[in-house]
Amino acid sequence: MKNLPKGDKKLLNAWAFYDWANSVYTLTIASAVFPIFYEALFSDRDHYIDVFGLHLKNSALISFITAAAFLVVSFISPLLSGIADYVGNKKSFMKFFCYVGALSCMGLYWFDLENIYVGLAFYFLGLLGYWGSLVFYNSYLPDIAFEEQQDRISAKGYSLGYIGSVLLLAINLWMIMGAENDAARMEAMRYSFVMVGVWWILFSQYTYYYLPKGSKETGQKLTKAVVFNGFKELKKVWALLQENIPLKRYLGGFFVSSMAVQTVMLVATYFGAQEIQWSSKEESTIGLIICILLIQIVAVFGALLTSYASSKRGNIPTLIFINAIWAVFCALAYFITLPTHFYVMATVVGFVMGGIQALSRSTYSKLLPETEDTASFFSFYDVAEKVGIVIGMCVYGIIDQITGSPRAAIVILAIFFVTSIFLLRRVHKKDVSN
Image (cartoon, rainbow, N blue to C red; front, top):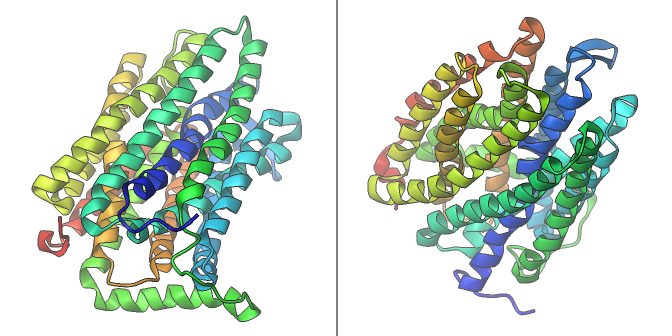
């Protein structure tokens, strides 16, 4: 079909709808059902397993696998986004990673400790597919929306993602709660992984139908020289950052903040399963899923409230305030032990989780210089985010492995948020238009 003009409502909605399609991964696989399923596999092993020639705690192992996946993504994303902008077909790259991620989610159905390496490979590829597709998805934002539309449509995307993922998780929760015994409950969780893959592929087709092929109408032939073009683009972006001081300062604050935010989101359920004093295994399973559902529901309002606050107070002051809330949350998390505590903390996380993600993305977009090479700039953004996650997950995993408890790691994340506040204060409010 003919490309829709920039700012077209149908085009904006189609772009935002990809959040509806792919956010089921972050909720079911990264945050809720898979972590509970993974913990249940170790119920008779005292949380430890011999793998890769090491005796590792299960939560430390999954932290290291997650860090490895993000390290790969941080390496390939600038290369691929540079290629995509050069040949003008970033939608094809977005589709490829989407399908790799979705099919890997389905593959998690066969995850078990007897074939741990196969299961970890599917988990690894699921992460690779999800985050790889986001490189290209995020890079579309300045292509399809005018600057004054970007905050609103970015928040709408996250809101759609929360609503869609909550809907599927509610179905999964009904399946799990309806199971007659532990074995049936585990099987219901396995089916939920398959449902994530089907949902992701099915609903992404609406986005693909309306999104243009790429930022260029006609691409150029892919050659060996182009393969290395992504690294040249990354170097060019780095050079431009030396001239764009506000953008450079913002990326510093974003890097440290993202390091902590993404780590908390990725390990929260593992923390809840191991450190909260649930009365039974069934209460733990249901309680953790309810907590994640609560986070997602509250996050819808949090993202919209943050968008409103940024329009009144400015992006940078709003981000500083949200980081302060995160810092307090991490400090208090060290002391929580009861399910009630965990529910309260889940509510707080919900309000600040969606807000900081949506506003970080749109603030970066506003600080970009005039350019058609948006994929390379957003690749740099994603590299900063992914490298931060690698550091955050490694810090968490190492402390968890050494101490046998992740509580101290959560306190370290609070220090990251405080550092981000000081870095963001160097960005002047006038540098970010609203």
